[in-house]
Image (cartoon, rainbow, N blue to C red):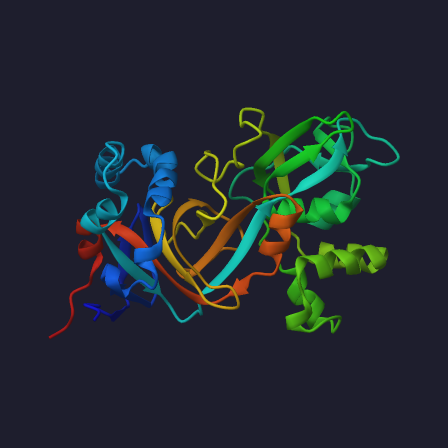
Length: 345
């Protein structure tokens, strides 16, 4: 049975260097409370943890990373030095998927390849709001500045490349270039899928990435207007240092791993931390993941985006995933109990 300590928090909680203020539920679990914990491949999770833990700077994480590098038994390592912590609020848990797209493109503009991927202009500064997607794509702000990285042949795929934040461009000569997140225009992300439902185009259960792509291509003028509903715009950079057989770079500037890396909200989940994820739905997932990425749409303590890999097959799997469940952050023991609020007598 659980040893859970559960209470509503109405004061400041400090975690991972970020201070949060909201009404949260905080729960410490035993490992026996995690569905499927015994069956997971803990060594695989530890290997992924080791990819990014050297970049964690706080003393307790640094000590555990050094210990992990001594090749301990993986399950013992997690069970001895961590405690699963569930942090939640009134929002329901939501797990989605993402992937690394592959687009057809070229390094110069042509009649076929006419939709540019841009580097961020110097005038775009982190934390500030710049022009909207519509203004960038229809106005003169980007013209003649030499900011194009490549051109692709499909504006819809380009839109979803921006949603994913990284991808590969397959050139006519067979080479590939990889691009990664290079900044944004500072506008909040708006879901075009929800907008389709609001406009009465489809119902909630019908909407998926493939459905959106198909509709926009069949309705180019209305489709362009739909995509402009999302004012958020992502700029890119070339990522030539990552080998083709490794995953794209995540928020920690390290390659992420299909099926083990997730994007989280760093206001609640420390980047680099192990996270036990229990995804409900048609194809349940009970697995130890590592929080190695972020995303503009990933907000809240029970929100995660699972990385599925590269290409169309991964994209189809990711695009259909939208399920509830539960996630528990594996925190160093002292950190986990130090966060626990005093329970009133």
